[in-house]
Image (tube, rainbow, N blue to C red; front, side):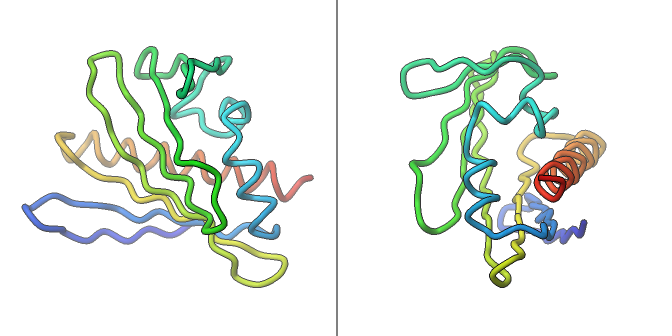
Length: 142
C-alpha cells in the first residue's frame, strides 16, 4: 500500500492511497462497484446491510447513517461516489481501478482533507488503507 500527499489549491490537501491487486481490472471493478459488497471490504463506510434508496444506497457506518451515490457503471474504472452524512454534508470520493496488465490492477483512492483536522485526516487515511488491504485480500483469495 502506498500513499502520496500533495498540497492542492487553497491550502487543502489530498492523499492518493493506492494498492496493487493480483486480479484483472474488470473483476476488481465489478466487485468494488457493487454496493452490496461494501460491508465485506469497506468497514470505514459500511458497517451493516446496504439498502437501495431510489438512486442511492443507505447504510450504517462508523459515522452514523449515510447515503452513498455512485457514478454510473463505466468502461474507465471510475468508482467515484458521494457520501452524504447524517448532518447533510456531502463528500465526493474519487476512486479508480486501473489495469496494470491482464492479471493485475491498481486501485487509487483520492482522500480529500476538507474540514478535517490533521489527526482526523490521518485516521481517515489509515481507515481507507485498511479497507484497500481488505479488498485486496478478498479478491486475491477468490
